Image (cartoon, rainbow, N blue to C red; front, top):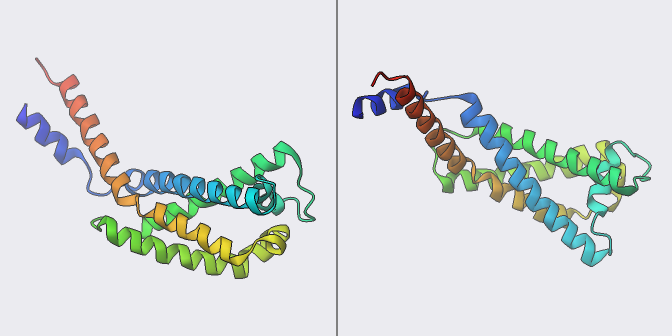
Length: 180
């Protein structure tokens, strides 16, 4: 039994792009996008009385005149937001050192998100979504990006969990293929 476990441990690759970057990045990005969405919708509900206004503004990528209305536009805005967050978080996971600590990942995630905030508010949002550029306050976007940076701090934990799942999967495969 011990030999099979050691075989499984050796079979777990030290670096696997899907396990160590794509999946943790996508999960952390989803968590960050969810946190940003909840905060943005809560602030919009309190300040403007329209909780889905942030999603409609993000949908301004396709509705450039600010004419986005209805559930379809809200779903489009949410899809865009979650897709961009997942991609940016995967980029962060690719840049994050494999043996880093959770505290280092949190600090680097905050720096990464502040860099994103600077680039997004000054360059990307005015070009990509004019309705969002007209209506979104920079201070609120700053707070939302801080929440995203905090979610990026979960990448090392997600890597560890996925590595353990991979190790367990390989151990089960070794038990299944081993002769009795």
